[in-house]
Image 1: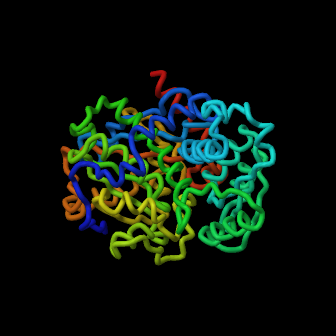
Image 2: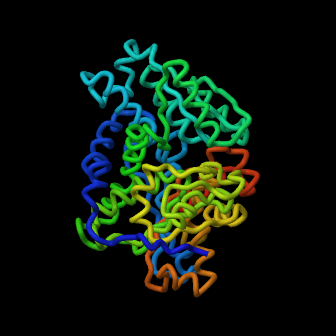
Length: 405
């Protein structure tokens, strides 16, 4: 059941929010990452899937595919790396920002250490960026992070610290270790006294929205190509980064934003109900590892509180079924490799379209044009095989055949 946000606004993008995140700053982040070997040189694909649109009874269904953003396999390659660049510039304003991730200043940075907690993808992005910049990196992992995800981070040279608790406890441990050792936390969630770096992470995600605007030819202040945009929850950072950009670009004609999260990790839904940054009510543990977060980022909530029209949760099996649907493809639809967290938007859309009353609540009908963000590929390859029934490489081969036709 979606929760309709009574605080959602449709006026111009507020100046108070623009002072924190803006299109101008998002474009600066894009420039600063432009020379980094860790991301693709071109925009990620924006696929139209007309077969699924027809099945769902809507006019258009599109997928922005972040699985190919980077060898890291997810959109997180846009957040931690640019936040690291901005943090290094605070210490060394004389550095050329575009050259930091090329290793130009590795000698000066060899004794500098950054640390973060992660469910997998954020830590992987930070570890890769730290290696290329030439500084040390420590990553704190909680009990539910798989060995497969741990190895994917460790390959970039990061020191791994394991704890027995959950994600939120790993955040606390990272902060404690940073204070004890004089290290710098580079986290994607904010807390009291710690907002600058999470802001930089969120601003990095604005690249996704910028590419969507360019790929669809959306004009400033005009209604864009999509009536509805489904965004993953987590602590709220990715959603905040995208709604910030699109709201500023389209103003009162912005699309309807729907945030989706696991039923057992419903911190953003609870925030909407309570009217403040809140905690989840469930166990948090979910197959959607990247969304298994128990506490809302207060900074992200400043943006989501008035921009998101509806909040809803989905079950793990609904996300898995959506993974299989995107992987299968059809004569009309290109097969897409989407990880466990990447399909949350499609899973939510299917739930809504099965129920006319729920569809009406969020304004979905035969004229709707819907966008989802596939935030990750098979970042845990064995998990992907277990859930989908084939390898990501097999899906990619079928994708290549489909494209060649």
